[in-house]
Image 1 (tube, helix red, strand yellow):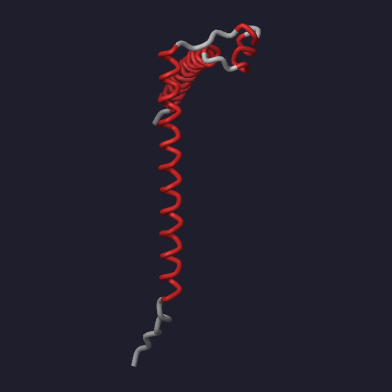
Image 2: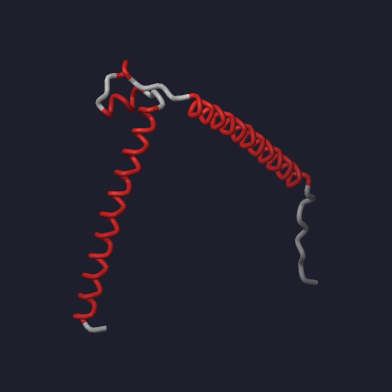
Amino acid sequence: MRPEAIFILLMLTTAGSSFMWYRAVQARKRIEARLWGFAAGQGLPIAAMFEGEPTGSMPRSSGAEASRVERLEHQVDQMAQQMERISESQDFISRVLTDRIEQLPDPRMRTPH
């Protein structure tokens, strides 16, 4: 490859990477603003503090939002229970395999006759 082609390829790669980085930073800022707004709306004082609102005047969630949050909490609890069961089963499997390895007979050496 010629040096001019390598230089052009390097410049295009740098420009493309810079553009993608800029877009990612902008998307991150939009997502953070949305999340902080949601957290302030749910009554979290740390989010209100970052938003610049006084913590005493935070809006409370409506009944529909409260039921959504309640369902979300219930689902998170169920997922935590499932994760606990998975970890217990992994511990059991590792104990069974460890015990089985200890019970194996010693390997015999095969020697040519």
